[in-house]
Image 1 (tube, rainbow, N blue to C red):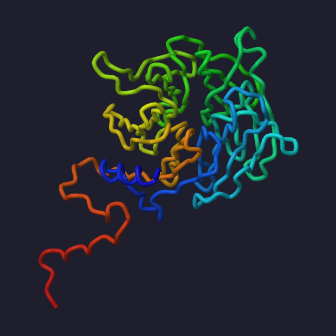
Image 2 (spheres, one colour; image 1 turned 90 degrees about the vertical axis):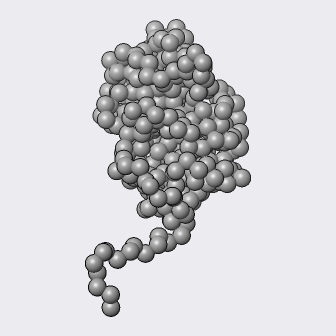
Image 3 (cartoon, helix red, strand yellow; image 1 turned 90 degrees about the horizontal axis):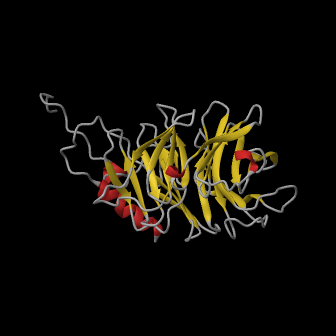
Amino acid sequence: MISRIWKAVFLCTGLGLSSTQVFAQITVTELQSPYSFVSSQTGKEYFISSINGEPEAADNNGFITKLDANGKVADLKFIQGGKGSVTLHAPKGLALVDQTLYVADLDTVRAFDINSGKPTAAFSLAEGTANGSSRVSLTDLVSDGKGVLYGSDQQANRIYKLDLSTHAHSTLISDPRLAGPSGLAIHPKSGQIIAVSWEKGKIFEISPGGVITELVSNGFFSGRFKNLRGVDFDRWGNMYVSDSTTGKVWRMTWDKRFQVIAEYLPSPGDLGIDRANNLILVPYEVAHAAEMNGLETPSDGKPKKEKRTLADYGFVPPPPKPAPEGTPKK
């Protein structure tokens, strides 16, 4: 049912298959309250976090699912709390850095080898952050590609900074204006941190120095967003955000034009974009499932006069091109 919803909406809104993909939709089931869905930089590996219980419970039964390059489940419980030396309570946001998968797990950032699934490090943010005076509950993670991880804390209205080389961590910003920062991303061109708000449906830009700028908010007469969960960018700089309450995924272009690319979704979570293969990755917490779908490659910006056909989305072969004018007949 989920795939049919995506397929219909993609065709109606002008989104479809990447020319490099041979599948339209792939659905992953048997997950347990999946939260985040990410891909490696090469687009050959995918990981999904499953809370598997209460989102704030230290029950050590969370797990990470690994998919192969074709989107097939390679190991449903590739990393599993309570198995061997693994501690994993309620995994939420994920960030991939080289051969390491970083996981937001309550007040700790846990690191795992993406090939073996074995734990390699754990960084507790419970002590030494914000004077140690309040509880830490990580929501999402993002890497700046320069050795620094940023983590959002939706409940505390904070964003933390973790230096992977020194393991030092600190509070980058603590501000009620963040209104429940949930999803994080790094703008591919500016390098600024992008945070989406759960409580007020806002989108913020935050500098590496902690300066906050409101990019998008609901107007007085319009309530476009409700509870934003995830955010990411495609290779051309378009932003995608998921609204868990309204069941929509939005795309925002560089000139701040908005378009709903999918709707009627069962609580879309912390989405990701596979830039290598031009795919959108969406977990569905209440449906205990996740999906991969293709995104259309942007045109040259000129409106397409011809009506779109199934060939534009890879469902049927494209029609033969007409011979150039003046070509002599045989």
